[in-house]
Length: 135
Image 1 (cartoon, helix red, strand yellow):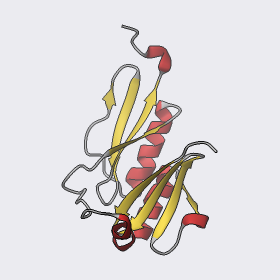
Image 2 (cartoon, one colour):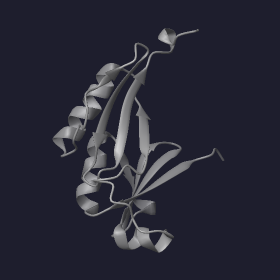
Image 3 (cartoon, helix red, strand yellow):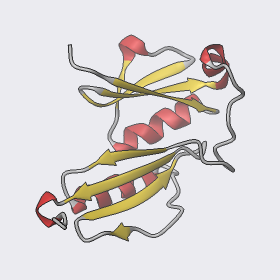
């Protein structure tokens, strides 16, 4: 079995968050979802678990961070093109996400940032491997 990653996020409004992540392009895996948490699938090996505060707290050993005012992590999702980056961002913004800063163009990589309703921060990026500096 290939290694997988599950990112667990505490969310205040499970349905609203589920709709936002669907807009970004995630799909729901009902096998690992219930009324307290939704398993959202990005790819065969990458999953985001959206957990209401009660369920998240049952796994946590520390208080839930206020990610609206403090950064708890930066998560990055790759796209296959600049157009796909812009499409994902447009759908996420239409679903209520916010773009806290301007896009960044590093020459070989274009990156845009979106935050969900709880302030979880995602970097959506496209990297052109042929343009990566060699020195």
